Image 1: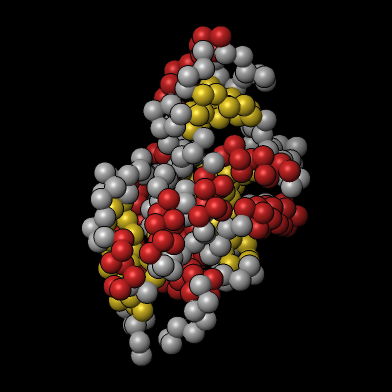
Image 2: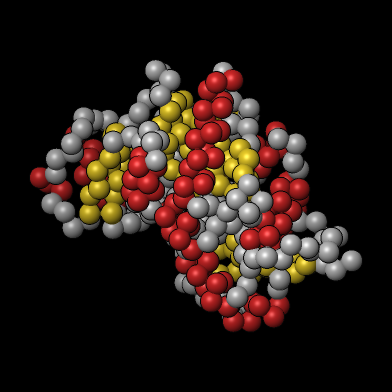
Length: 320
C-alpha cells in the first residue's frame, strides 16, 4: 500500500507560533503511520523555511497546515503552496484572508442575514484622545486580523479604552471596537469533503473559569475553562447554532474544516463573532473534542481533513 507523504507545517512569524508547535506535535504524532509518512516542517519566527518551499513538491504529496494567526491562517502560506503546486489542507487563499479579517467577515455575515454585534474600526494613527465610540460601554477591543484572542480585552470604563487600543495595536494596525454582548459563549465546528458537502459537529459551550471571557490563557491552559460538548442547549437552539455555522462556512468559502464562535444572548438572539479556518488542535482545543463527540477519533478527524484536501485538488483516490 502506498503511503502518502505529509509535510506538517508548524511555527511561522506569528503571535501564535508556540500554539502552532503544540498543534503540529499533536498532528504529527496522531497521523496514521500505516497511511502516511509524516515530517514536520518548521517555519521560523523570522519566516525562514526549514525546507525551501520550491523543494516541497518533490518531497511531499500534501501539506497539513498547523499554523495559526498571521502568515499561517490569513492566506499567505496558502499562497506560497499554490505557487509551488503542493496540495494543502483547509481553505484557499481568499477564504483564509477573508475569515482572518474580522471586519470584512463581519460585514459579509451581516449581508447574509446573520446577527453581528455592532462595531467600529480604529486605526493606530487615529487621535485616540478625541475618539468617540458610536455605542455605549462595555466594548470588546480586538486586533482586526489576529486569532486566539491575542490582544483582546473587554473595556468597561472610559479610562481603560486607550490602553486597550494600544495593546491591540501591538498586534495589528487596526482594532475592532465591538459592542459587548452578555451571554453564553458557544462554538461549532464544520467539516466538509472538499466538494462543498458540509456537516456541523456537536456544539460546545465554553465557560471560562479564570477570566471573564475566552481569552488566550483560557484557550490554551488546561482546566482554565470548562467546555461542555454537546452544549446544554435546546434542540432548537442547537440547530440554530449548527445551521449558522454551516452558513458561515459556506459564505466565506471555507474548505475542509472551520470553527465559528458565537454569543447566545439571554433573549435567544445568536450573534456570530468570527470564523476560524484553522482551529487549534492542542490538548485543550475544541475541534478534536467536538469530533470525538461526533464519533471521530483524532486520527480519523485528521484523515477526513487530508481526504478533503485531496478531493479539492482532484486527487480522488488515495490508494489507502
